[in-house]
Length: 380
Image (cartoon, rainbow, N blue to C red; front, side, top):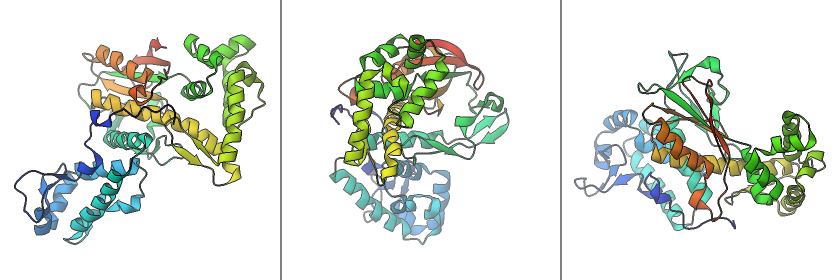
């Protein structure tokens, strides 16, 4: 899209490039089977000689499999083409991994030959972070639960299966299994979807509202009505495509953009996120879904950028994300430094990815117990 900055370098943020996931080129491997399986120290010669030994090693050291599969999942490549990277590889014959190697090499080389969109790379990097978050956590101090994240929603926002941290309440008393954990730090964006709309529509009144407080409070003061009523009306207008909703009169430029965008999606047959991801409208009745996916997908891009950067700067500190919020589990000694660093990332998530910054207002809260955090600071 117009706003993309082509100079952003993903190499500054590990992991290694996609095409280097499978093999090291360390010396000592058999000539006919060069290289080691990435992250395991297993040569392809080992594969040929003892499939059972390989199976046992992969069960205990699945770094290669998890990393590669997360990348492919994040890049929206058909999982059937990479299902061999799952633990099912244990069950085959001794030559199966050689077949896997050839198939994956073909896919990886195809990726290298084409320019991969920024949003795809971002999603791939975020998928790796989500895979790292899939570790046991404690519920009520003793029960172990395993979160499972998925990025297969229409917009690209995460969803969970099994126990959902997204819906966990204070009574669940969640905590990481780290001994040095002392505090939760909760970074919560203020109306992130409206912030995207304000940027795209260039509505000065809405941009001003974000600088002062937030659009819901801004309109509530103008109309002298409760903030919750304004929020419901705004959601109804945007997500139901109700262009005649009276609340839109408070933001005339945004309303014009809103109307023109609906016509554009209807005529073109697709909508586009802020990083250029297209959402195709296959049927006329999908207009609302496709329009909303572009907004929600743009927020998803922002959260994925945050996950990538925070995990790079503070590995092992991310506890979870709650759609528009990020929660870290930290020790007392690093609390101040983490808040200072992460608030800058959350405030400007796209950073150098775009030529023009989009500042996301956020509220930072701190607490020792799950969902019992208290407000600490607002960042505009």
